[in-house]
Image (tube, rainbow, N blue to C red; front, side, top):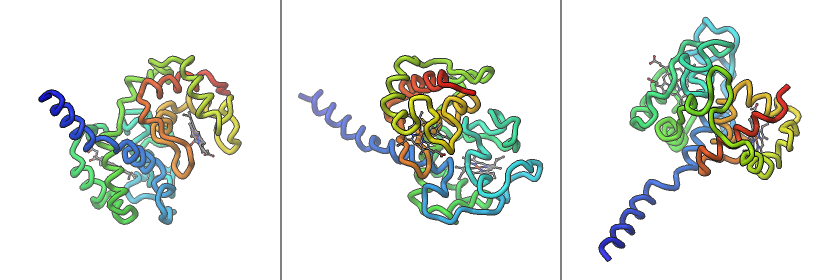
Length: 229
Ligand code: HEC
Ligand code: HEC
């Protein structure tokens, strides 16, 4: 009987922490194009923190968290160590599992100033994503080949065909104004993983976060078999 009470107690405590998966994913969407998640005027000027050394990018895209900190959350130590988003800015992985209040302080500091755009609830979701929502993608994607390290593409095809294909088509090229899924999955697997996990800002695309990384990696393994040229 005592054991039963203990289990009920554990369950109650667990429930206090559970149920925020959608808030974390919402934070993941804000990390991407926050100005398409909330009803604000998107900044049309270049972010004052964007380094002058990078002349490839300007305007609203320089305000996306991912543009400075990367889809792999590793900034200058990850995929953005080179290429058109090279800025020399560090990643956000140091705050994975970190203190949410410290992240809120950073988001509202002079450099970030995100409280000018986002109300408290959105800042909170974003901070929650930083502390609870990141993955170390180097465990899942081989940085030399860009290919998945784990994942069952046969299982992935079942998930893809029943979920993703509704919008993207069985070949991944149904949405005409978008680069086909198979091509992005090879060029930028971290972006595709971030989007499978969190969804696409401003679109009905679902977040698969609650299904866990095994499902995400099965889907990744399959989309890397879709036509990619
Ligand atoms: C224009 C570039 C830029 C954008 C956009 C940007 N940041 Fe930053 N961020 C920085 C710089 C620069 C630092 C300071 C790095 C340092 O301390 O050397 C930083 C630091 C951080 C840190 C602390 C990292 C650490 O390990 O100390 C976090 C967390 C962070 N940013 C989150 C975000 C989030 C979330 C967004 C989106 C709302 C965002 N940033 C948008 C440039 C940017
Ligand atoms: C309800 C429809 C819907 C479903 C279901 C859906 N998506 Fe999407 N997805 C979209 C839309 C719409 C976009 C934005 C297209 C654009 O930019 O024109 C998008 C964007 C993407 C992008 C980013 C493209 C880019 O360049 O920004 C990827 C990758 C992607 N989806 C993969 C998937 C995968 C994998 C699944 C299944 C887990 C999935 N989507 C499920 C509608 C959907």
